Image (cartoon, rainbow, N blue to C red; front, side, top):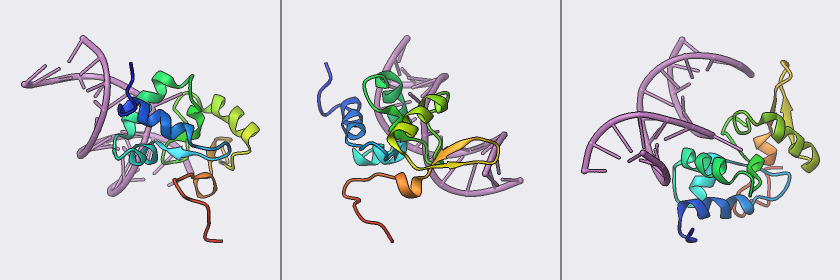
Amino acid sequence: MHDPADFFSRVLDVVESIPPGSVMTYGSVAAAIGSRSSRGVGKVMAHAGGEVAWWRVIRASGHPAAGHEQQALEMYRVEGTPLVWSRAGAFRVDLARASWGPGLFDEPG
DNA sequence: TGGGTGACTAAGT
DNA sequence: CACTTAGCCACCC
């Protein structure tokens, strides 16, 4: 099956550590496991997206997974994730406030 | 073994 | 701010 050392399990482990209302970028998740394969993280989410909070993993732009923006929006509303709305009606996660990291408990104020 | 793909990212227009 | 182009890394055939 999947060893805890596998890239696949490593990614899931990080995603599971993201608390509600916060998010991480694909690149940050990859970096958390000592990798730079942001695309590899996307592959994992596409495979196990139904077993983890995939909506807490977004792009560096603040946009959620391509083709799942509407699904993610429903989750952000119930988790209270800070969003930023565009004039065209498009939304985006406020990375400045929702960004999550290992040991990030303070802010610039 | 080698080549192609993608739930991505950074830089340019 | 939105769209396009080149670069990267892990996985599949």
